Length: 103
Image 1 (cartoon, rainbow, N blue to C red):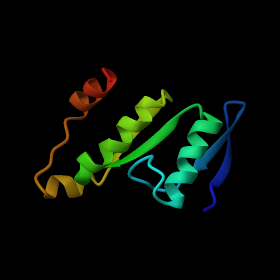
Image 2 (cartoon, rainbow, N blue to C red):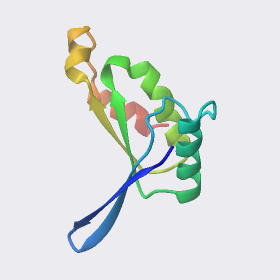
Image 3 (cartoon, one colour):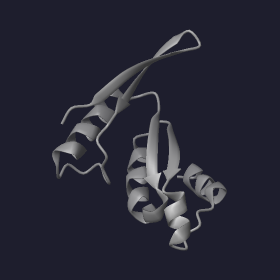
Image 4 (cartoon, rainbow, N blue to C red):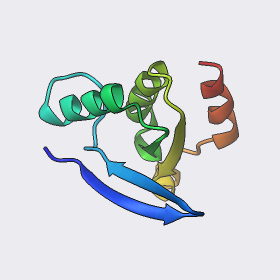
């Protein structure tokens, strides 16, 4: 599994963006999880953008909790919010943010 990397120049700074494999945990049961965990621990990125599927929030929050334990700054980007709403799932983003801030 290869990491996808790109460079962005903004406000006089060069920013490297790394797209890690999509995973559900930092276990090492498959190659994607191994690559992602190794990158996070060894490279210590400045920030992680954690894309969370709102329609499967519980499953995705397991990885979120593991990322919080690594103490790397993180932004959570909720996607599939429209699908979640169709399933009757409404995410209170303010409350979710507040709960995660205490962990």
